[in-house]
Structures are given as structure tokens and as C-alpha cells.
Image (cartoon, rainbow, N blue to C red):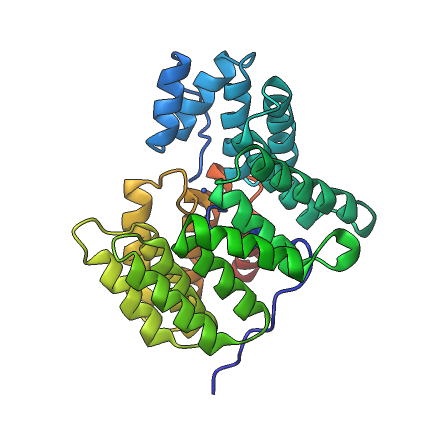
Length: 334
């Protein structure tokens, strides 16, 4: 019988579940030549983060540039610069819900890294900015789902509240049934009612067959529960569609690593993902290189693993796991 995952706990863990969180990778040794601000935004949306970063830096007096620089920093696993950029964005436009939402995400990442004394402060700031986002824009689905996650998982002294989560879930159902189902599924996961959560995500996938995220939620939970073949099948179905989901390649690789099977297929998927490059709401390039390193390590191909970890650190120098993985493989080769 597969080992069932324990319920997630803590004010920080909720941020790992945010359906956006996560994001493509960036910086190369040399910056591209800067263009106009609209050109930089277009580069960002196409996943050309190195060029976008140069463009935003050339227009650093713009609050919108600071917003995008903050999002790029999050993709680089740099929460401190991200929060600084996003604070400037919020200061430039205090009534912009998106700016508050992303600043909340940056504070969440700071909370993950903070010591016990600062964690409560950053967790409180996380909740504060998510709440401000929904006050400014009640139909901001991502911010409201983030609040549900926070309320479900944060202890009461950090503002967590099961009743508040239920209230937000009710609002989500009125705004978007699929978003409401996501919130309900998260609550069921928190209660370890995994069969109910699977049924909830299946319902969401049936309601929105053309949208990839509900199928990712379902496949991801199957993977956590050890239902590897079901997860593989869901990812394969998403990749076989007329408009495939690139993130399914990363999900397939994570499932291969969890199961210890189909590792060469996983490597092929990751190579394609890396070659094509991710878009803003897809897993980062640094994460893809890291996963490729883990696949090669699992295959015993240590030199290839080392190269993949090195590449991960080149595009995302602060990746939270690539450095340790690189050092461990390097030491084993000495």
C-alpha cells in the first residue's frame, strides 16, 4: 500500500500549493540590449526573461517595471529582491490588486526561509497582502485561493481560520465553480480525505476539459498517493492534446522520480521542455534542469547529473536544492 502524504501544516507550506506559484527561469551571463517597456512586457510573456529583465531595468522608475522585476526575482528563487521590487510596485500603485497579490507571494517565500522569530512577521504580511488584493478586486481568483490555503494551514495565532476558508470557498463557487472546487479539494487534502479530493478534482477536470490546471491537480494528487500509473496516464493525455500542456512534461518527470520508473522518458520530456522554454506560469527552467539532474543521478549517470545541476545554478543561482545536489554528486565523483 502506498504511503499516504501527511496533511500539510504551517503558514508557509500553503504557498507551495498556489496554482501559479511557481514560474520560468532567467538570467544569463550577459544582459540583452534594453528596449521599450511594452517590448519588455512582451518578452516576459513569451518567456524571454533575460531580455525582459534588461528592459525592465532600463525603466526602473516605473512601478510596472518593478512589478515584473519582482516576478522575475521570484523565478530566480530570490525572495528578498523580489519583495523589494514588489514593495516599490505597491507604493507606486497602492490600489493595484495584482501588485498586492504578488507581494504576498514574495513574503510567503521569505517566510519559508525565515528563522522562527521572523517567520510570523512574514506570514502575517503574506496574509495581509492577499487580503488587500481581494478587497481591491473581489474576483481576483488567485488571491482568494491563496487565502483559502493560508486559512486552512496557518495556526490561529497567525490568522488561520477554517471558517474564513469556508467563506472564501463559498465566494469562489459563485465566481468560478472550478476555482471553488480547487478550494474544496485543498480542504479535503488538509483533512486527509484523499478519495474525496480526487473526486473533487475529477469533477473540476470534467467541468473544464480544455483547461490544464484541474488535470494537473488530479495528477499531482495521484502522484502523492503513489498512484503512479494513473498520474502518468493523465500527463500523457494532456500532452496528446491538440494544444498540449508543457507543464505536463515536468509533472511526468516528477512522477518518474517518485516511482523510480520511466526515467529515460522523463529525461526526454525535460529536454524538450528546456529546449522550448517555459512561459511565466509554468515551472522554471532552473527547476527543469534540477529535475533532469535528479533523473540522471537516479540512473547512475553522475557526470550528466553534475552538468544538469550546474546548468540549474547558472539560470537560477539560488535554487533551494540544486546547490546541495551538485555538491553531493561532485563529492561522490572525487
